[in-house]
Length: 172
Image (cartoon, rainbow, N blue to C red; front, top):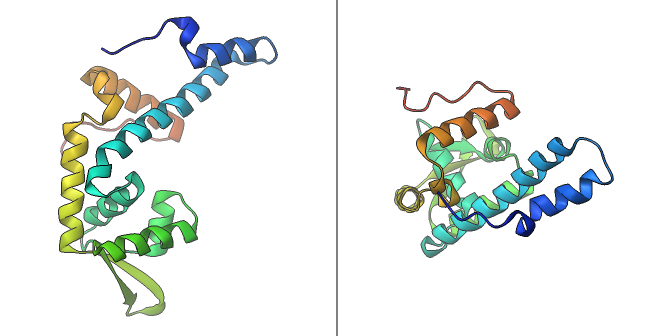
């Protein structure tokens, strides 16, 4: 199921030892550090997978979010909210995607101050290529988990977000 370094080589275990010697709530600290390190590992692997497609995970996520909408378009500030990023970061992402021809900016006919981002045909093709690459890679380190482990982890992460467990495998 994957390589497990000796406990002495595990940076989380080393950090736990240091924390436990000075502070309370050892398990909370271990969960926090484990999540942060795991996120960094997953991000690194997924970025490596998407790089040959000239995509970052953030750019792929914008294309994916647009593809999930009925008309394949969203206001820039809605993307900002969905991505949990600053408005200037959303603008930067959209600018890079527009330069690549993967999205187009349009003025909202109801409010010309609002910028709408629309997925282009080229963007849809790039998003599909990214989805295939991520799927083929098993989503990086997540490939090391069996189906039951993925479902359990998904449920635990949903609980941290204050959400119900995902209904994996159920019809939408």
